[in-house]
Amino acid sequence: MKKLAKAGLAVLPAAVFAAVFILCSRPEQRPDIPAKTEDERLAYLASCGIEGELLSEHLVTVPGEDAVFADYLALQELQKLPLAAHTGEAATVYTYRIAGSSLRAELLCAGDVLIGAQLYLPEEAQGMPLSGALAP
Image (cartoon, rainbow, N blue to C red; front, side):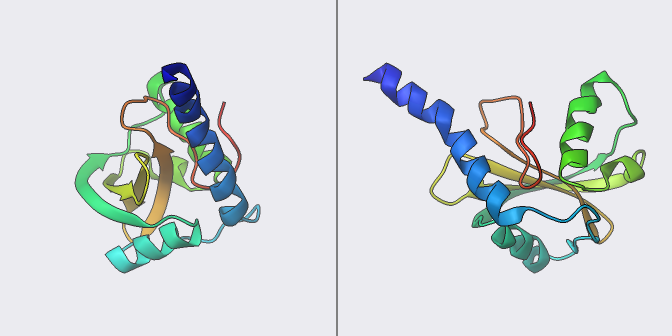
C-alpha cells in the first residue's frame, strides 16, 4: 500500500502540471504580466487554475548565468518569461501554498512584472513550470 501511495505522489506533480499547462498556455510573444500587487499576483495564479495563499516573500538578486542557474533560466524561457533580461537586478520571491495540495507556487517579480514562476514540492529540488512546456 505504501508503494501505491508513493507512486500516486510521484504522479501528482505531472497531473497538476498537465492541468496548468492546458489552462495557462500562452502565445509565443508573451506580454508583461503585471505583478506589483498581491491582487495581480493572485489573478495570475487564478488564470493558471491555481488558488494560492501567500506563505512568504523575500528579496533576492537575480544571478547571472551559471551552471546552477541554467536549469531555472531554461524553465523560465519555456514559459516565455523574461528572466534573462533581469540578471543582476533586485527581485522579490513570493511563495504560495496551493489550496488542497502540498505543492508550492513561486513567483519571481522585478519591478511591476512577473519574470519567473515555478511549481514545486517542498521536499523536491526541481521545479515545474506554471505554464509553457514540461521541463525535463
